Image 1 (cartoon, rainbow, N blue to C red):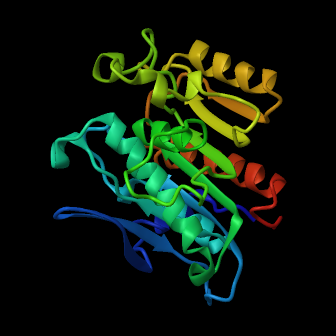
Image 2 (cartoon, one colour):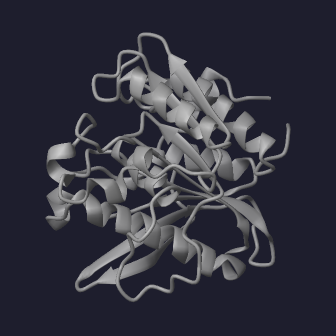
Length: 270
């Protein structure tokens, strides 16, 4: 049975089971916040998902996706909310955001055995700029931190995207900040048959991500022979999916996320 409204409200302020460093850059340590299924063991082979918070590549916190992580951990996945560098704290650009997303996925796959994770069932997800980071891990190539072991794939096996920034072209979001390298990190411009199956949630009144962009992205994926699902929420603005903003929309999108993950073998039917 899917959680009702009262249950959703009761899950306020979830806490991770473990926090681990996945990347060090000088004095900066970037961490993964783990939510694990009950009685999870290293000998398990669970599906996993890594979420990336939104905040315009400027700010944000992994706590944004704690509710999603707690929910998916209860459903049997190892759910992770990742830290990554942002402008306000690290004086970085969107390029570093993508590099950190790639590093996070590669770290999880590299350590899958000790984490009790199935390396062939690792998804990425995120919202807004975090949706961009997630989508970029599933589409772009050659954006990598120096010294990483590129023999380990950083490409996720599925993407769960909430009002994502996925067009960095001249007409897309944030182009002025990334125009020197936008083709390298724009998911819209790096789609091919290797792109992971993707589900997208978008409000029709989103002031940052036009519906036309979302429909174009979906159609380009379908043209490439890749599964792509788009759920449009009538009249909803940017960020409508967050539990703190709208418990009702949070529940609806989570239910559709679950169904998508069930269809891919990441979750079992209830």
